[in-house]
Length: 388
Image 1: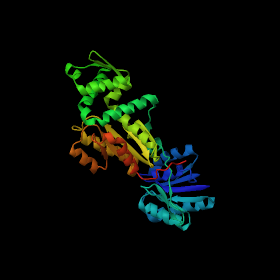
Image 2: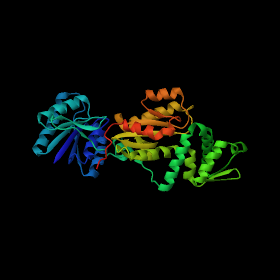
Image 3: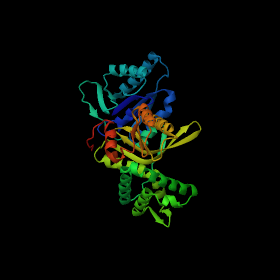
Image 4: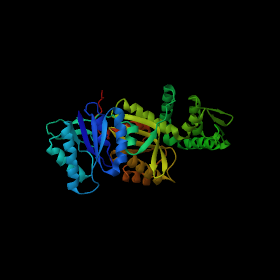
């Protein structure tokens, strides 16, 4: 029986990921933490128990008194020694004074000690020195990742037939590759779809001026050929609510998500992905809901992609600050976030995004969306070979 031990902190993902690796033996995990971290422990345990890994919470003093922390960890070590279990100490997480105290204790028992290196996601051995480093398998799922950070999520059920999904992807690629040319037409289409939403119906009458828009006419023809809408005598009728939402900007989210799916064939470090993830967080007595347009886990790191088809003149800073906040709240230190914008971005927005550590794809890059996304995911580190 092999028991892993690690210290809970604000970013405990690397305590979980090695336990999910099929090549790493793990029968039990003991989480060291303070009483105030009980809720964090409960979330971590809820991920392990369905996978037949036992979990235990070992409480240490919430102080900087090294002597009392060390004495408590020695208690744990003696208990493990008496149980005659093999012990591996995961030194990846924990406040420094707790981590160094625990390292010192476990080192005296000559038990193996490892860290998960953040960028490469490799298991690196501090002791014994002759063990080879190994890549940690990419097995944590979106729901697990968000659970670690205190969020519950609802993933949409995919009801779109694969054939239609391919059509929508091709349509999105066509619109994206002509982003600068089709911009005004798509803005009008967006407006018409919004009008339908507000009036709670699926048909809308175009004004005489709108009927003369060449770009809008091209877009409506695309919708007709894909079977998403009909157009007669100046009246645009969407086939169903999903079609209306597609025209209302979801086409870009669909395009990005379909592109992520395509990249996964060449980059196996993409381990999970979803479109339109509803995320719920408890803040005091109220539950706050956010939607992630596209979310994926790459090399055991959460990636959030915000898709924007409207201009950012009025709410640019709000969009970027919100994206940064969600990245930090839901994904910890290793999480990454990107804004994909169909409309041109102001220099101010580009600079602000860089300051916040956010990646950006603007309309000029949309024709090469797959290349830009591939490179961004590749920069998350890890190895891109297939894992059996």
